[in-house]
Length: 621
Image (cartoon, rainbow, N blue to C red; front, side):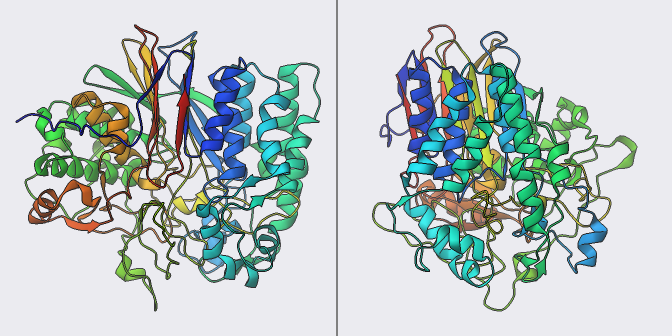
């Protein structure tokens, strides 16, 4: 049996050039980043400029009050993949005891009690300071311009605002003031401004400093100790509606922001078919992808083909095992990664892959004599669903409260974004940006959180806090139990791939728990199958939901698999015959990948972007 051949048709060309390439989830971010490259900036200048634009133009998918993770390599040290850590920790007053006293058994999915310390802005400033070349004012000029002068709002944003408009009017008046026009969402294409956020960015530029580095450090201090910190502290003390239906005050304080600084660290890696794949540590879900690659590496090529029944089944079963380990072991703690990523452990786990679908959560014994890590109580959608609960499954999970359906039109593919619940609950969508320059600098980054539906808008700032703490458990003794000062186990998981000591691919995707699952398909199709990046991005996707979700209300579907219909009736029926609980999601609904590539031998650069939703864009020359 041979690997499935790629289709001749692609939705977009595989871009090729030698100067620089950018791909992101919004064309304005891509164009801004590419503009920086054209004006002499490097990949890091470009990525930071594009990222701040994403805060403005995709506020339903990320914001300044959220977080980010990145992985990059520099032209000076091409063989050293580095992780940019922009995931803030739980505030000092965010204790299990406090949340239990508020009558909660889970961290809410929206509202200020779900907020970790914002980490994205400081992380981007750190990257700019240490590896960029541009002045802060020049980098931020793109975002300031779109915030102050306006940009045409996309239908995606207005649909999200419409889904939570009632919440805004009845419970979050500051968000109603920020996002509604005469009580209704702005029309798609309307020019939208954010003067408050423009002033915040102006304040960062005006912070001073004797030289470029000093000016960026002054901006970091201003962010952590100035208007942003004091405004958040004052605002969250007033109780407001959370996703649970209760009224609670937040616990984040100015001192929490002052105590946080982003950082860099060595990437976690495994070798797969002659390539080194680099991810975050186990404070994120990234090593789960590495575990799957270690399990699959010695198998014959036909078992690594997601376009066949046997290949799709094998891939899904390996993913279940890795995600079970994620739930049992991963968190901001001492995680036994040497054991989890070893060839011996991969062989033990691979031996559990049978001919039929497993409906169990099966973590391994990674702790030596201690056995498997403690799992939280498992909940299915049926167990948490209340009256009027929505039926069916959005892109990345199903809601326990009735979701508001996002309308579609002929210009869009149905299901390209997950639904948003009236409570503000969102199942993990986000943004992504990749940049490579002519010198060989390359960066892949996934900013998220601080969605406009996450919590009430802070009026002085023009943005809201994130909701990453919902990935922490209120059950004692788990790998990711809520604890002050510890990071919630984030789903943000960009990828860098190296070959012969040189970066060759930067890759990532929105999609919560599905990010690594969709990236896995790309890696298998390109590395094993020989597909081009755009062929792999376009290809029909699937993922499993047979593990506890990271997003409130933390449910799972035993044996669950979500598929794009384009995989074909024969493959889907084959999965069902093996015992998989299959949900069809439409032809173009899963996977929102983008990537940039680099051939160290020829210097040729490439880029590819996701067609689903008709919004992502790649550019370069």
